[in-house]
Image (tube, rainbow, N blue to C red; front, side, top):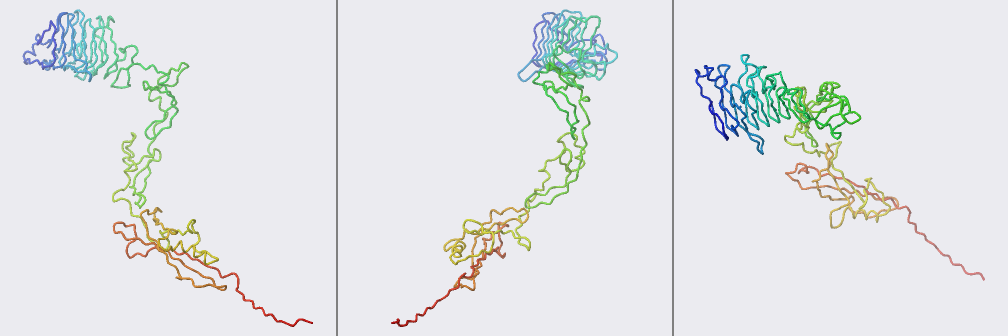
Length: 499
């Protein structure tokens, strides 16, 4: 023994390791069940908050050492609970990391945290000794946390061995337990004095049969966890209609889902309690679908839209993929698909707008008005020169630019207006002046509006030097006078009055 404790001992930290020689290891009288720390007598109290104990002497044989052994009514507390969780010592041994010797007064063991690992596990040992925690006596054992690992991969290796005939209570509230064999191994089946209650923790094998009332094992395969049993409150129960399959989800039958525990049930009774839990296989009505990929050809960019890269789209789920391989691999939603933005060819931006004048397209749209309303016909008939002059004053105001005429420049491709196009409009007329008109011949006046702007080398959308400015014409006609002008001459012949 490295340390035999009969009083009150607290270990905060430190490293403790056995340095036995090969000859000493071979001598079974020295290491057959020897221990690093023994806590003896009812007065023995060990509190170990941290540190490392390595009791691996005997690795070359099936004999070995225990890490800590307690007996004769002693008390052992390992690890401590903190605001950030739990922490504790690391104890690695060839035999059990922690042992409570049989046929001794009740011992008390509390484990709050830490790491515990044993290395035994062969057919040469009685199976009960192949364990991380060897609890063979009357005892009160409380495990609140920690990691417990049986280091040998063999079905005869367990996490906890306990005595079925000892008056002991083992309460497990947390911790992680890993072993190739069952988590619990009962050393004796002749009596059932031992009480084992699991209320929490994570296990490599199901601890079913040892779970406390009001708790249940969660999980259909490792790792198993023990959680509070769900009471299936009515507010937690959700009715789920039959659902069709998708590319990522199986179709499901009608059922009830409990938000409290995440389980599914076939129906609920008159007391609103769910009945008959459904397995995943029972819940499924039909397998999920396969993607239906369709090739979408690339699209050239325009002044309105970015170009689109060639890609595949699924006709069922609508997701987009850059390759068929990515589409076929996407069995979990959102793993290999891309968003629409990833398909856009944004390099270099969009193409410039097209304002070319051709035989079939004229991007310049003039609007002539009478000062209030648009004139929809470019030819207007007047009955008097006065009416014509009134409109002309709007087209060719004496001291300002006309506001009765406007022009917009519309892209030939996207039909969007060039809001930066702000030309100056000038109006000329032919003939330059009206001298007269008579009853046989009317007058025709043609007004021509020209839109000009200052060339801007930095703006490719404006009129460039050398280009002909856009024009629009408006024709005014005055009808011939409706009445001829007649001159009447009257001659009065005077005769003498009769007598």
